[in-house]
Amino acid sequence: MLARVKEEHLEFVVDGGGQRLDRWLASQVARLSRSRLQHLIEAGHVLVNDRSAQPSLRVRSGDRVVLTVPPPVTPPHLAPEAIPLPVVYEDRDILVVDKPPGLPVHPAAGHPSRTLVNALLAHCRDLSGIGGVLRPGIVHRLDKDTSGLMVVAKHDAAHACLAQQIKDRQVRKGYLALVWGVPHPPEGTVDAPIGRDPRNRKRMAVVLGGRPARTTYRVLNRYWDASLVEVLPETGRTHQVRVHLASIGHPLVGDALYGKRKTTLVARQFLHAHRLGFRLPSDSGWVEFTSPLPADLARAVALLESGQRAASG
Image (cartoon, rainbow, N blue to C red; front, side, top):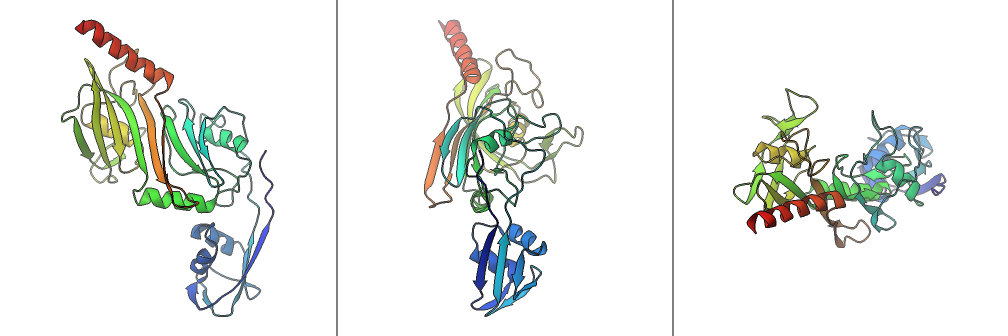
């Protein structure tokens, strides 16, 4: 069950003045983002000396500001669904979940329900909403068939804190990937811009004029025709790990979009978000979480190892 959130009234008296109304309010109500406050001001939920105002209004010392925060609304297309969801960590601000493969993050064409967001709505009892909408705040995403760790915000302030850490490249994300061949050198960095593939709009690609993207990798184990690699993306572009590894000639095993070889080892791309570290919104303490390979990927590695032992024995 989701908590019922009532309308909230906050009153302030400006001390000093000179700032824009939206910027000044953001300094007073840290849990609401500036963009959220701008929407509230424009919707008439903020009065300055009993009059509606614009975000650009310069407040003056002694001004009386009243902010009304309406309860978050539930989008009509989103419904809580009791989908099993492995929760690694939870507090009043965030959840860290270990997303199973095959679970889309957001509803979209082709999967309007049975998504991570639907599962989170059923799980969160104290959800206060993001941007005025009763929904968990997705800070970063994983592809439908990529498994592993994700952090989710429960309210605006937590979302803003985590988003800023991602922007400042302070969040540490690590993936385990099985790729075709053996990357050379065994440790390296792919620094290449990523954008929409001009020949196939369903794909991303390394393209001139794309958004800057940087990925480091390290080979952990080598097999006859594949390698287990730890991948550390420094940026967060769409399909970044898949695109960068394919661009150096080592696509993910099982990747039907960016790879060329079919395999019976796995039924999806071999990519697992196994490490996630960041600072908690509550006290800025550093936390780091790890997730072992799920059963299907662990089985693929075991097959490769047993085949290599048999061949060498």
